[in-house]
Length: 411
Image 1 (cartoon, rainbow, N blue to C red):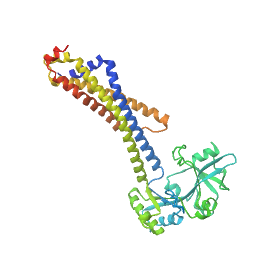
Image 2 (spheres, rainbow, N blue to C red):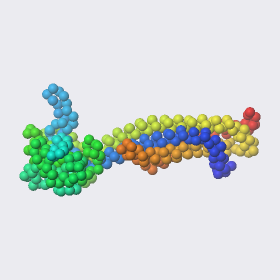
Image 3 (cartoon, one colour):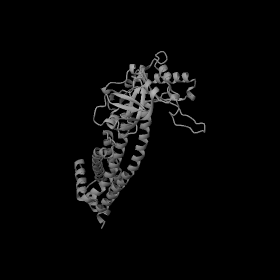
Image 4 (cartoon, one colour):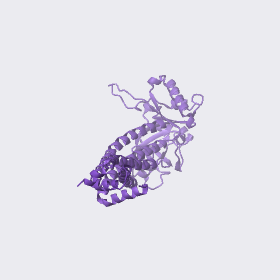
């Protein structure tokens, strides 16, 4: 029996029991769709997190202070200490100390209320230097950024993000407008270009106000912490120099603070480590949820096997007649395996279609990207085919072993 004849015979058997075949395929359809959507959501989340981290800048190291312990023994979280200072940033910017570092930016920040005559908005106020634009890979869309002259003269000027501008000034241009921060009046001289992060996020990079570091120290910071900074951004000269810049940063700060690396009162984090940590977490969740969804796929495979066993029982006389006319056990086995694999593959294709459709609509409903890669799509079809074949092995072997005379005598 030719392969084309086997395929034609299998399709005719499936068409002969349309409703039963459709119900059998639904099990595979649901399983493949569930796995495809789950993996797609996981991959979308990984891409989104990596994109957000990469927007911090390129070849970037982030230095944050260590934790504090109060007199009553309560330990603060990482970054609660005030162990970093402008002096540390100056040390790291020295090429003799750190030759693989291209730029250093110290940032002191606090949550403050920004007021206009008509609106108020609480945002993160940062005191920094002109290097901030370079290390954070940002641009100004209107006006200008802070300059060295602003720092030298404690100029009361501020540059704001897109979300901050929308909250305070709506659609009007903020350039030249006056705002109140911590009891002082500032002139808005610049508007940052959007970073693309969501305005709904609590860590939106479009919701901030930036002023000269000297102005922040004298007008916003508490007297006891005027020399402290919250974060130091260190940009390596290139991706190849990132590891060397990491070592130079650690060693320079340990020397400045007179501590060992084992007892360091600061933390140096690279973008790669942030991406790797976030990706590892997302992969774990994706595998766990995908495993749960795969259970429905297993149930679908059992459904295919059950229907194929019923089909063998119903067609016992047909099998006996074909064998008595010369059909070999291999031909009988091939026919039932083809039927089972066709049911599995068709259910998988329909499930993949459902998953692709969900990947189009779900991001609009959940505000969460769903990414279905060609590898996932091809893998889904391959898995559905394998499940169909595996589910058909036992029924096909049972049909192939039937003796012609016994099959024809079956009532």
